[in-house]
Length: 353
Image (tube, rainbow, N blue to C red; front, side, top):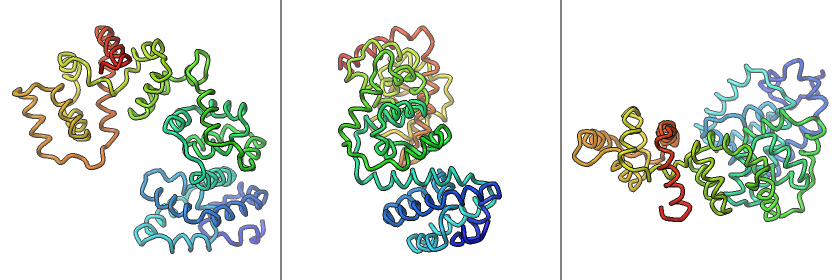
């Protein structure tokens, strides 16, 4: 391949272009031009995305983007970052330079991502819509697109990086071309949300309902609450009772009687309990402290000493909260607690708790 094909690529990007990817670059000149056009058009939002990604541990955006940028664009990025950000970006770049990347997927990824950047300022979606989309499997999203091809642009604005990577792997060439080159949608956010609700509606045969039990095992307790409230709003009482036996909602655990909490948490490591309490807000922490240990007991004294000796986390560590909830729910799967679970769920459905 002649140097002309990648003449604007910095040396590091050339190094990333392994022999088997040379033809891919040649065949995707138009897409590379589109990449740079979209970056230029959405420069401010593109830099914001870079700064946000630099502060996170997920470097998927860089892994797929940096190999496609020319020296001029990289220099412009450098001028938009502070010293520490440039230093961190350089470390990430060097770590990528020694790895093999599939440039075809890089091109598809960044086109998707740039679309999302440009669309974020155009469309606004409800928390319920975002939860439904981000909780959906790759195959469910593909099924949605087959039935609702006019909403490709809206899906682009909603899906997560992980979902994007999965979609790239599942789409054939024709689907990719259609998805990326889709014209600006004439459909409104409102009509998209209605389509999402209809497709993922909690009906007996909907893809969403069929996979919901598995979904609930792998999402955060915040999203779990959103889904249960959605089900409640739809008056899916029988279905809520069915799934709650094995996927009891975390936000209702506090309503178990104290004797059951004592019994089920006695085998949970004390440090797990302390970390859990440290990451709750003041009201929740006091409520759970009263559940975990009665005032005047040795355990209560130990917990209070530990909590007093360490400051409350300014930003809650979700993993510490979820670790405790996960261990507690595992112990509550014992059939002895089924009646209590049903009573708590019924009280919640009747707005008694």
